Length: 344
Image 1 (cartoon, rainbow, N blue to C red):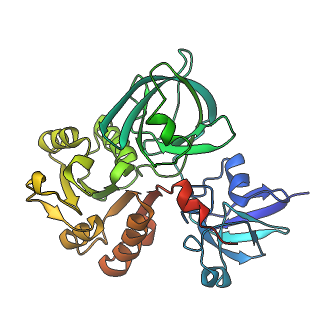
Image 2 (image 1 turned 90 degrees about the horizontal axis):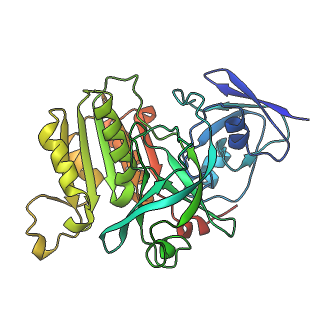
Image 3 (image 1 turned 180 degrees about the horizontal axis):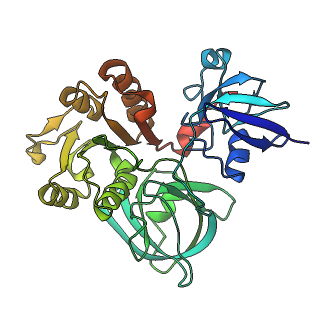
């Protein structure tokens, strides 16, 4: 027995089985609901239940508060139902029929531009090609069955290895391995692509790209994809970091700024060091955007990085700068430590 879920305002319907997560059922049937972490931590899949009822599994209060649940909102990544549902949620188009694959890969190279950032390049088998949209992520499959999610920093058109940017999280099951024992030619496995964070090419609006730390990775893929497709919409990258060294691909971004007439780069440091001799912007990166662009009503924003940055930008851009809520696209880099602070 299955139940029917009707998505408004699109009118799309799909079936969900008993005890099956609503998002899981949608993805199984190629219905494009927005999502990010799939673990009840980021809030990207939040929507409203118009009729019927859902039961939630473990999730973070910041992703769905009790007050929001009382108002009829739900996190579809961790919600199940025992009856037909009508939900309100924007659907995601443009994903096409991209298959999700489990693939082995070999470490082609491992570079550490800073003490806590690694650029990992993964070579696929010779007869395999990974289709994905710039901005999506893969999940590294660990031997104990755990998974770790990383956005692809390489654009889909690029030949060669898949590039990941990994920040060291001390005590992290995978990142400790990356920064200690992992070496070239080691074999890993991953599954993907996943996620609904990618450039909406059907718009002509100017773009604000907002990154903190290694949140630059999917932003890099989006920019390189836009260059490849000759997309000339104005793009401004705001990259926030603690100190200058944390903007670990400074030369690449400066090269874009010098060579692309439609591209601007604004680095923002929160803890500039004396040796940086920093004369640029300081403070919180999303506040730099608000200072420069107090009216965001005609923009699209793509934000990626620490959850606090993404949440603050989403809230403040809409409340204070007039950004339409449906023009904010985000990928919140939620760590396993973040996910542990869950409620029911």
